Length: 232
Image (cartoon, one colour):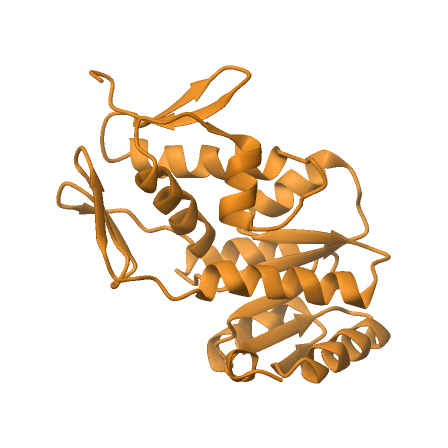
């Protein structure tokens, strides 16, 4: 057990007690503090009282679906990382999980080793210490110390993953970044070549940034994306 993992709290939500028990046991073995829930309503309550750093959230729950739980938490301003568990393997379902505010997904049946590795990867990128610098481009400002983003005077609320994606763009302005580069530097592990997660999160980031000013992220067809202003 490391000091870092000992400080992380994880909420495990699934309506199958055997899965909750197995996942919770594996995570506690790694040194995480774990809380358990078996319904969507329990998950929403626990998210408030337990204040987890990450939620392992089943897609199919008996009362409020995991997808809806994720949406409600994001609507309430929770930036807690979410790892969805889903028995659905279709690409559109995986993209829907990401659109609901998920940071990643694992398809059932899964190995506990894979799940723990995904949890560790998410926590590394959402909890990593930042140098506290202020990065800026055009009217866009990202304050690493305060974890805040502004366009001019307007705050732009971002999830942890969106924040890290924007930070990578700001560290590489006017430079074309491929999807594989973004996967490696923002997600920091292999997604098996699936770039849907990059497309999805760039779409989210664009929507939030464009609501406060002119477009800043340009698609370079068949290559990747670039942070630039229209007059660059």
